[in-house]
Image 1 (cartoon, helix red, strand yellow):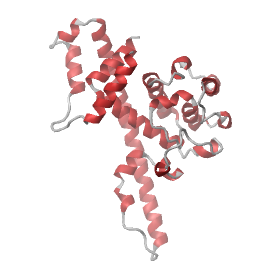
Image 2 (cartoon, helix red, strand yellow; image 1 turned 30 degrees about the horizontal axis):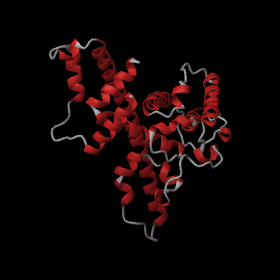
Image 3 (cartoon, helix red, strand yellow; image 1 turned 180 degrees about the vertical axis):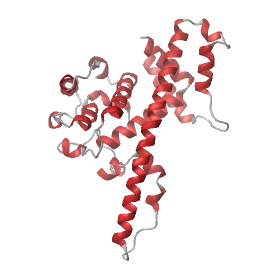
Image 4 (cartoon, helix red, strand yellow; image 1 turned 60 degrees about the vertical axis):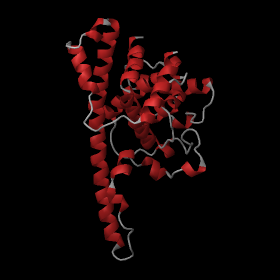
Length: 267
């Protein structure tokens, strides 16, 4: 209960932090598992979690996972498969199935965040062929025709797609194409590895900051007088967490969206 309250409070005070992290997790999951999910609450079907843990262990019976599930009983079947995987690999973490299948954002966000930390620690590396593992099942709600992308596009890291200028060079001509293609491929792979390493490092420190923020807010809600103590340690920590660089502004659309989500969940 304390964590849920802190999450709502955190959303009101720093909406960009939660919204930004939520989008980062979605991009990572879609890239890893060849999915096209648009909201964290869609993880409540259980299928995305099965795919993430299959990328680690490669022994989840993905052919039995229902990626187009629309009913609670199908969600429960997926989480049963996930629970069996947890038992098999001695993962000492309860799965809050009853909360996750309600497809609420906050519950699925917290479990997805924990899953990302576990993945960072245990992923063996290499490429994960998500489509082959699930026998070509589509990855979530079908997007509009204009929004469909190839498997290769979905698998590319989101950050790399937005910042890797090496992939926007002049198209290769016919002369020396083989050698130039090989060189560009090698350069691109090196950039992707660098980006992935930076993403993991960023997520590691970001998750620590978020945990500190939740602890501070939980303590303040337990003792409201701490909120008024401007010179107190907790208040100073909170000030540091919420400070931004000069000239930085929180996008208005993120603020509005998060405000609606928080208001909905507090009821």
